[in-house]
Image (cartoon, rainbow, N blue to C red; front, side, top):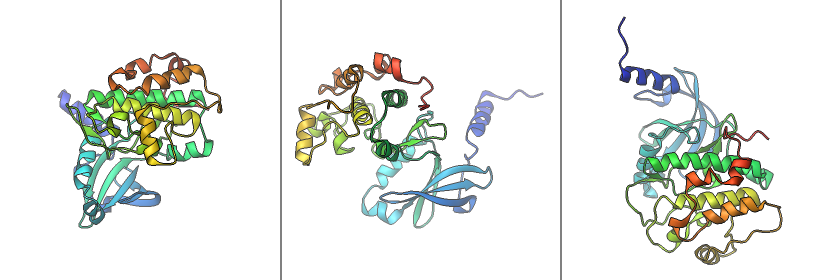
Length: 293
């Protein structure tokens, strides 16, 4: 009996992992279901791949709008990066296809929807829930940084919740694959680190800052440097004007972790592998990465 080569075994394993994967798709390969959301450049639908019966999310983008906003290059980069990432806390991009008017991205379906809506509903999360989410995201970012990918836009709107309740980083529109420091200002105002606000070079440590902002927002329901005017938000970020309100009550261990991540000098921010060893994470995070209520 012939013994399968290593590459054949890997191919078999990858086929088993991703029943959707195939060289070339068309719209005919999918049964389209209900809309899941609407974005700036198109819509997302739940869909079933007919051959495998695998349920996916189909993101439909309009070429004319991509061209008008001059983001075709950005989309190419996003697809290139996300399609190569394999991590339980990163949404899979199985592939893409296009016709004359549209581009279609075939994405993993996150059954429990947007984390942003869940946070709005709850107003803020418990420390156990926040710690579980932050630890799982730290693991995903360690994986990204190991592959020289900086995400640059970690925020609740870019996180989805999988069927088991696990978080998935879903949007890589601002991400970059790089071996060097960068200068581009990108991301979302409340989550921008001081080095981007001041237009100085930045590196992967921007993601540590954003994760610190996210942790704060999980626990307090608002981002830490929020202000009525953009100029005041910029000023608060540059000065790291970090205040911890008395309500809701948050432990000193959680505040300590946030304070070690929101540091102006990016080289002094708490490294992600150290974050996973922080007492607040160790005592509160569910090791499975799933918050069980």
